[in-house]
Structures are given as structure tokens and as C-alpha cells.
Image 1: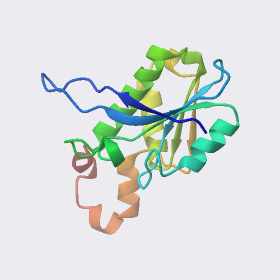
Image 2: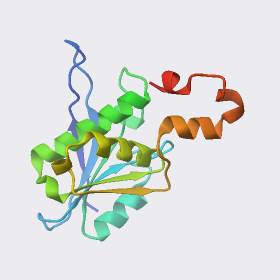
Image 3: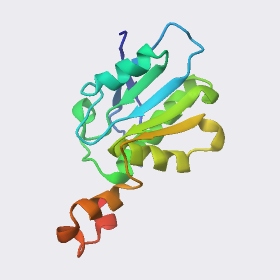
Image 4: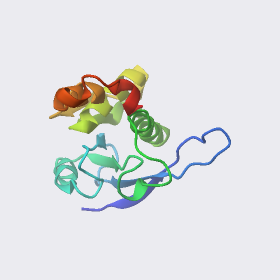
Amino acid sequence: MPCEDVRIPLPPDGEQARDPLYAFWVPVENPEAPIFLYLHGQDATRGKNLEHTETFHECGYHVLVVDYRGFAESFGKESPSEAKVYEDALASLNYLTRNFPSNKIFIYGHSLGGAVAIELATRAEAEEAAGLIVESSFTSISEMSALRYWGLLQLLPVDFLLT
């Protein structure tokens, strides 16, 4: 499976430059093939879930799989947060729409990445993506935290703590 390292620029934070996101671009021979923006789960990285990437590639799709800030090589100087993960997904979609026709781009999210994909689809313009695919996910990060850690977090402002 061919795989290229890609760096996705993030917009500056005021006047402060940011480290780029690290991603793998996995192209197929057909330049007209659809593209999956693959947003991975919490315990994954761009290199850890290669079986998903490989499956998409074998089905004839280009794949861009990105590490959010705080994951693998995109660790940088910033800690991960819900807001930053959404911003990273939007930067990744913008990278694709600058380089490819948006009617070929599908947002795919797995687990945590599914909630990120849903949020990205609500923020994206209708013409920026051809579709949304979500696997084994939930509707929001804060809802999942409240369910999973109900006893501990029911008294805490989960939404505030995650952003």
C-alpha cells in the first residue's frame, strides 16, 4: 500500500505559529477515485489502525488519515482537547478541499472519530463533502464521558472540562 507523509498546516494562534498535523496520504491509481478523510478513535493513531486504511485502499478509495494534536507525531506543544480535535478535523477537510474536488470527499469517523466527524459535518459547508460515514461511535464527546464516568462526572461540568 503506497503511503506518503503529509503535513497539514494549522492556522496561527494569534501571531503564534503552530506545529502542523501529521497525516498519511494513501493514494490509489485512479486519480478520480473518491477520498476518505479518516478520523480515528481515542486509542488509535494514523499508523495504529492501518487495517481500516488498507481496507479503504483495497476498495479503491484514496485515504487521508490524520493524527490530532496530542496523538503520535502531532504531539507538538499543545495538549489535546475537544475543541482542538474539531479544529484539527476542519483543517484536514480544508486541506483536502484545497487540493481535490469536494464532491469526491467523504468524512469517515470511527469511535471517537465518529463524534468528531459528526461535528465536522455540522460545521462544514454543504458543498465541502460528499457524505458522512460513522462507525461504532456516539454523538458527542461530552455525552460519552458523562455515560462512561457517570458516578464521577455527574457533579462536574463535563462540557467545560473538555474544551
